[in-house]
Amino acid sequence: MEENIKQHFRPSEAPLIDQVADWISTAVGQYRPVLTSFLNPRQRYIAQTMVNREDDVQLASDGGWSGAEMQRLLFYPSYYQPPKADFELVVLEVDYPTKFIELHHRQIMGTLIGEGLERSAFGDILGADGRWQVVVTTAMAKYLRANVRHIGRAKIKWQLVDDSAILHPVEDWEEVTTTVSSLRLDAVVAAGFNYSRNRAKQLVEHGLVRLNWETVTRPDDLVVKHDLISVRHGGRIRIDADNGQTRKQKEKVVLSVVHA
Image (cartoon, rainbow, N blue to C red; front, top):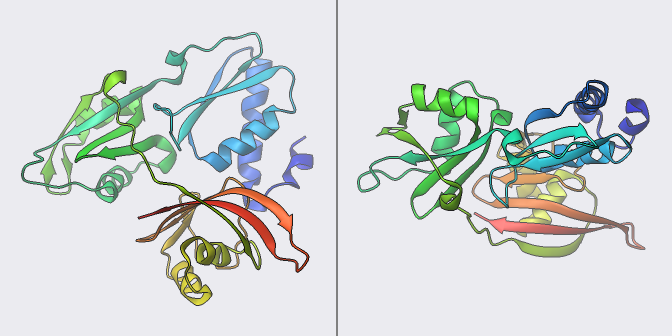
């Protein structure tokens, strides 16, 4: 099955396809749920596509809040009904002296990565009105509360957050229906932010663009549905639909854009 499905995805996504196949096999063969680390929307789309081809396994996801981008997946036998506790998620709030210090998303992300964590080890970082929360696994929550006492110059504590107090940040996504000369990364960045093609190309080449949370430097990388593009100081673009070509061989796409 994996070889057949790989032809529909990027060569770089082959390791994920193999991993998903293993998760499915374990859930079916051992009659038990299999919980993953945090996956991005594109990764979850691939997983769901593979599960849809199976009769004996189902897929559920949870990222700690209703609009989560990063979510854990649970593969489980069809007869099983997973409770929310199966996802082993908690939300921690950063307790810091807000009167004297201002924290930013990049500082929190940098601290977590600086601890040696992979991006898949924690979920969304939620911010609103100077408050910051991070979705983490129950095991990671114990580690952070015991070992991480500073973010930048700020001395902090991690406080457990009740479900009723989880932040729900609102992002002003704008839908953009347009055509692009191709699905190259630089072309889509240019279309999403109304940049010149040359400016978009340089942003990619200088490492200022991330595709699905990974820094990329090739402007000719192709994007596909469910990809998420982040442009430093620009904002983010989500590929919502690829509606084929126009008569002049341009690509018809639907993007969601949020400006930084």
